[in-house]
Structure formats: structure tokens, C-alpha cells
Length: 472
Image 1: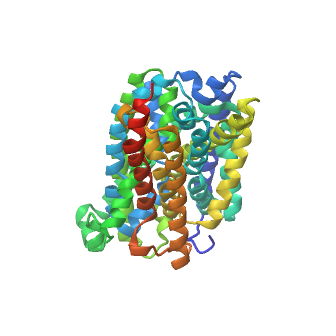
Image 2 (image 1 turned 120 degrees about the vertical axis):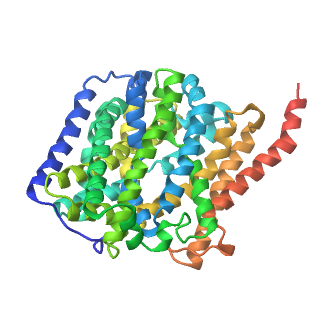
Image 3 (image 1 turned 180 degrees about the horizontal axis):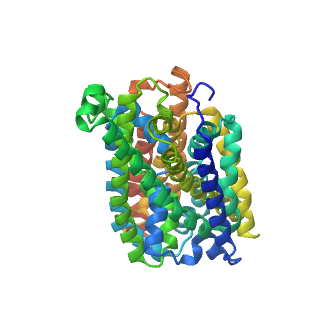
């Protein structure tokens, strides 16, 4: 981490950030006091999540990878919007119409609940491990630690420790209620900070003509100079939406099916606005500072361009964008490990206590991932390629009667898909390096796992479905 650009802000901006951190902590702990000691309240806010709160928490939670967006845009230009925006809008809209109301009506808690109810205990346990990997907040801990290092000039791992304290402490005590109430605050902060930055850049440097004159041509091309297969993989990774535990948790906590459906649709509009702000800022960063470390594009831009106070507000916006996802993913990881895995294996015990244990394990696993893969984009790509293909077909098929799998097929589909993807990934690393794998025929791991899952589902439909239909 030491080779990344490092700088720190002035005293006034640092004070603003400290006030923000303790403000979030205060809000989270204040609402933790209203938590009732029951599972519904701790895990799902008593299933009373209103439409405004639903939108605020989903928008802020789904957009946590802000430094990764800066990194991606600095490297590839508007390809960021093509791969990190557009496909996710499509998937989210489909989720809103076809899955959100059904999830709210199911009265389940988590994705492993759905898998267990449909395919049995084995599938639920395996699914819980994949969900746990998928929701790991490693990339968000990485980004937050880098920001704290930049803001306060502290060592990276000290920044990591501060991130843990100010993002998991209130969730440990207050559960989803504390998570949602802090998300509402952070929703407003993230939009305010980026609006200030983009308006300032426009007024200081000009608009499209400045970008066109100072950016490589590839940065203004939809493919960003990348291969079609690489772009297609990102479109498939957007299917992550259909297995995103945060979507399922918010829909389960919603007051009604209508709240779940329209909450997602309204969220898409806010994501589009925020994508415009962040992609614009990323293009300006590349045009003004072409030689900086891409992962630090946004912090460098804010530190160099904005005046005191506004600079502090922008860094607060960066933190708010990340930490609103960090606390949510940490909590979902805790639920998945504590309730869906440990409690389900033991069959007894206090679910809330197991969830709190899961929070500790989630942080520990994040430390390991950050140490192995110190790149936000690479962490996204890795866990998305491994776990999305394994979960996608069995989970989505559960909601479509004609496509539902048998219990054995669903279990095999998840296992074979994950193992196949992992083996292909290891082969690529063996042929290349950990950070720059070389895959045979340039076939990305995601496609291997996705093909294996579809193959098993197809065999089940051809062979097993008629056999099950013929049984009395």
C-alpha cells in the first residue's frame, strides 16, 4: 500500500471529518437503543422499512465502491458507465418487477433461507458460504483505510482499524435499524459532496471541450480500449444484482410488496444521477492528473481542486459513500456466517449472539482479502466471478416454477460451478501471476462457472423433470 499517493488534509477539513465520524456513530448508537431484543427487529427492522428509508438505504448501500469507480474511470473512461452503470440499471429494474414483491411476501430473512426452503439444508449451507464470500466488505475496508491514511496521514492498517470501529460498532448493537438510520444521513452527504466537486470542476476547467482535448481517445469510446469479452464479462457480473444479499434483505424488511418494488425503481433514478457525477469526476481526474495512482483519483482531485471546507465536505462524501455499504455488508456477512451457517448447523442458540460473532469473522476475512488483493476492481472481479455463477441459476429458478431445479441438481450446480470457476482461476494464476492471470483461450472464469451451472440445470430439466412428473 505504501506506493499509493499519500497526502493529508488541513486541520479544518480533518475536524469536519472527525465530526462526521462521531456524528454517524451517535446516530447509529442512538437508534440502537430502540432495538427490541428479538430476531425480526435486529435482522430486519421489524419488517417496517418505509419507502423513503428504503430508497436512501438501498442507493447508498449499493454504491459503496467509490474509489473503484474512480480507478475504473481513470483507467478506461466512459467504459465505467457502460459496465458499472447501464447493466446494473437493467438488472435492478428486472429485479423490481419480478423478484422484489415475491421476496417481501415470502417472509424469509436471507438468501440461504430461500435456498433451504426450496432445495434443502445442504443447498442452504453451501449457499450461505457463497453469500458470505459475495458480501465480503474487503474492498470497502480497503477504500476506507486508504482514505483515512490520506486524510490523517496515518499508516494503512491503523486506518483499517478506524474503519472497523466507526462502521461496525453501532451495527453490532443496533442491527439493521442502526444501519438504515445512518444510511439516510450518508445518502444526502454523498450526493452533496460530488455535486460540489463536479460543479467546481466545470466552472474552473470547462465542460466537454476540455475533456475531449485532454483525454485519450479510448477514454471517450464506449469500449475503453478493452476486448469485447472483457466487457461482456462485466455485463454478466451485473447479474450479481439477482444474488445480492442487500437487495433481498431490504425487500424482506420492506413494509409491503409495493414498497419493495417502487423503492428499487426510484433507486435506479438516483443511481443514474450519481453515476453521472462520479463518471464526470473520474474523467476530469484523468484529464488533469494523468500520472496519479488510479485508485486515488477522487481523493487527489478533491485535495488538489477544492478549497478548504468544501474539500472536507467532499472527503466526507467519499467516506459516506463507502461506509454506508461497509456497515451493511459487514452486517449481512455477520448474519450469513452467524445465523445461516453456525446457527443452522447447531440448530439451537441465540441468533443475535451468533450474528455478532459473525461480525468478528467477517472483519477477519476482509483483512486476509485486502492483504492478498490490494485492488478494489480486482476484488470485485474475483468474488463476482467465483460466486455469482454458483448462486444465480438455483436462486432465480426458485421464483420461476417452470425452471425450478431438483434439490440434488441445485446442490450440484452450486458446487460444480464454484469448483470449476476456482480451478480455472488457479490455472490462470499458474500461467500468469496472482494479479495478472492468463486464462486458456482467454476464457474468463465467470463463463466457465456459468456454463457448468446451466449444463447441470439443463440435464436436470431433460432427465429428472419427466421422472419427477411421472411419480405419484
